[in-house]
Amino acid sequence: KAGVTQTPRYLIKTRGQQVTLSCSPISGHRSVSWYQQTPGQGLQFLFEYFSETQRNKGNFPGRFSGRQFSNSRSEMNVSTLELGDSALYLCASSLAAGDNQPQHFGDGTRLSIL
Amino acid sequence: GNSVTQMEGPVTLSEEAFLTINCTYTATGYPSLFWYVQYPGEGLQLLLKATKADDKGSNKGFEATYRKETTSFHLEKGSVQVSDSAVYFCALSDLGRDDKIIFGKGTRLHILP
Figure 1 (cartoon, each protein chain N blue to C red):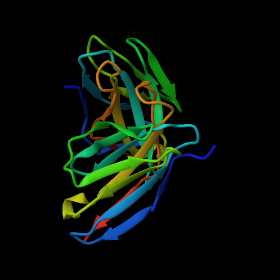
Figure 2: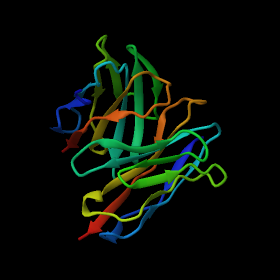
Figure 3: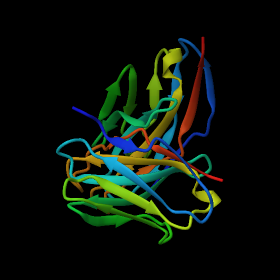
Figure 4: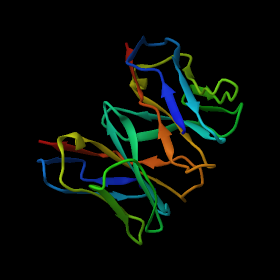
């Protein structure tokens, strides 16, 4: 069974631009969560989607947004990019939201802001 | 709120040494506890988990016991290998609250041949 797939793997942008990252969950998984990983802050939760609805949101500015499609695929968008947005963005899927089950992670998208 | 604190790295050991990576947590409910591992260039993988007090999770020679009295979930391995070099994250998920997974900051482990 294919794992969580994130595209692209690497991305370089400049300040002020916007970016869209994609995540395809494991087949049958309906919950998708996004995390930002930086050396200084570690892993931080961005948001979680289940059945096309945002269930939880972390403490990030409104420039960070996401959505989930009917096939459970999810996209994350960051507008007006800042240097501090350089990070590894990880997507994770699980069968259902709130089931307290471990999440399965993709390999991430490494975003670099110049 | 809930939080996870794990020992800062990097931790450098020789092959076949004994490993302990400390992890303590704060939670108001009854969380499940996890260890995730991130190998170079890859995403996170679940290493082991424990869902209630006194449970022991184990995988690939690694073990961790859910200690409610000390709010700890220390990761141990009796004899590490070079291939164990990675970043290890302790995490908790509390179904009684918002069930987000909360991670520690990670501990980088270097194993020397």
